Image (cartoon, rainbow over all chains, first blue to last red; front, side):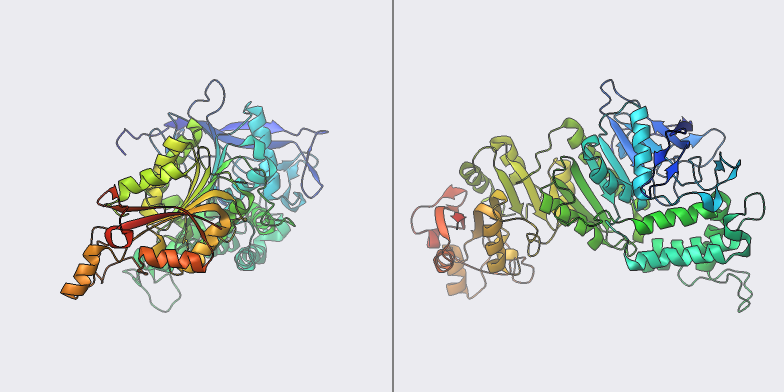
Length: 384
Length: 197
């Protein structure tokens, strides 16, 4: 990159509350939920005709803090390398919005929020939510911001599922869509990993059927769940590169301490996760991911029929959690429906984590793609 | 991409394509031809290309492109879903040219095929007098590093079209960046065909 690349600087958390009773949001399950608060951040400036808004959708454990620094915080947002002045999503050009999902635990309404009916945290009284519900809530936020049509919706992993959901549920509200390292439906293998994580949480005696608020949290169970997650996010090669079989210097072998570096890493990641994530949100969101099936009775050929948005599907070669063939299915559906689309399979050894790490490649591709969409000179073949 | 005859080939192809048509370019490389067709003929363009580096160039040029193998990439397209399907200098590099050509003819109303002529006079000389596999401007590779999997002449291709009942609507033959009209199977480095079925 030639021009100067910078940070969006200090950012502020914002809140949007809607669905106040009696006008609760009807969930896909038929249950009603309200009031709902979504926490969100924005970067860059919305232009006069409100045509430069890009909605960034976070992955499973992400949050609204995608870029910049919160007051008094040393750590930047989760996609800070990719969002900012002169970066992949250039905040000199675009108005970027990122909100924490419904069911989350980073400020948006979820199982750890107070249930207004009881005055206590919802816990397992929180209704089952879906990716569709998350997107329905986001649409309310986009309405609230007065944006008729988003320039782009972009996200990886669970964020990519939300992108696909936008394409199907609100095709007229988006000009382009960038699903990254994702799938149209969760496979048995993917559900299996999530189920092991959930079982680990629920096996922790501190979980107490979700009624742990105000007491000890199910830290061990949640940490083990996260360790499993991290194994699936990396690849054989990236683990070998990062840790090898290296052991720690002051080891006490065969006492089941963390001898190998990879063990120490997983324990550190697990323990760290417990500090920032709610165990019940873990259960609810992984279920939402498992239930995700954008086809849901539709054929591959009909799912994107009539979609006018330009689509850019991105996958990574070493991603075995969301293998490239699942992205190719999205491409097939685009071809069958005559949707104007592109597909790139980035050569990476990082596994599923690549969508957060292959910033240079993503920057090149998405910067140009957004420019093409924004200039409105897409000449893609939207064939019969 | 064949540098020796690339420029004029693009001009010929552009001349055959009608304005505003939909075009699928199989093995579109860095998208030079598609960009030209968008500029000159306002086509709606889709490329398919295997090289990741080339995909980056296409996206930078604002093109829609799939990173895919053209041996398998056409299955999802409905019959006649493009006005033109182009196989320029890629036809001889696919694993199953017969299958790819059949698929291209199914998906495209018309198809354009361009390939290097293996029986160009220089190649004949190299084979006959030097006893060596030819290296010419349109076949610039050594035997050990060539991406070309199939070697055919203009005569071979014309015969193939007859056998498969493919109609040759137009044909242009090229050598040294000029058109060749006399004995193309001997004097042309490359052939370009507009076909339909």
